[in-house]
Length: 231
Ligand SMILES: Nc1ncnc2c1ncn2[C@@H]1O[C@H](COP(=O)(O)OP(=O)(O)OP(=O)(O)O)[C@@H](O)[C@H]1O
Ligand SMILES: [Mg+2]
Image (cartoon, rainbow, N blue to C red; front, side, top):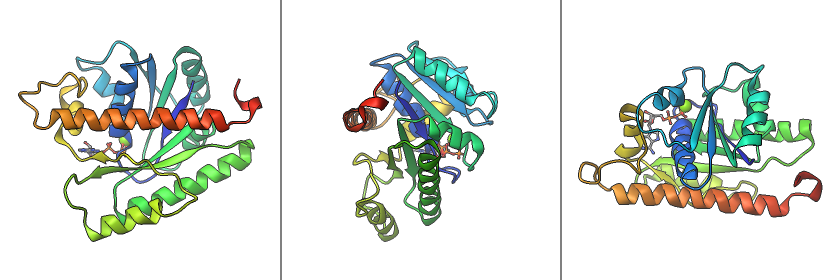
């Protein structure tokens, strides 16, 4: 327990990057499993390179028929389970959402990502109806520019941040070379050489702030859950 799914049917919105950064950061504290449910298997490919933390287990999803069993056995084993989904809406996406304690919807501050995020939110509401339980979700802005934001980016961010019905992360995952580099060199941002990576301290601080905000949200969700759901 808990199960955290990254979902946005728009490709390239930052799901895999944010999911892997979070999984590595959580595994520094507790054993963590990440289920790679993207048929292109980006996390599985990463895990075959050197440097995967020993407290992080990578499970490669077989198909939509196996996802529920994979989630169940990972949640029984590890304190944190992360699911990385592919960038299209699918039955597999609904299955993963239906089992989640928190759905994180990453989005770049672009109109298409924002529209796809709204589609995912509607899907989550349908899954809530189907399962008759609350499925908490929150929007995460990714690939943000550390410097000044464009007018479009500000406008899109405010559409979500100013909407009282939609929870958003305060932390944004900034666009950084270090975050893209883990997929080509393997390992974690923590293990990168500070003399070779500019701004490594800020990159690590950003990930830790994200991890801490996820943990705070999970705590609030747990406290708010009806007694019957806190097994
Ligand atoms: N915070 C970031 N900093 C730098 N590069 C990033 C960041 N987030 C994502 N990227 C880059 O943007 C591209 C898309 O990111 P990612 O693969 O995480 O998106 P995705 O939502 O998982 O895509 P898909 O829907 O295709 O699975 C990748 O090349 C990745 O390296
Ligand atoms: Mg991906």
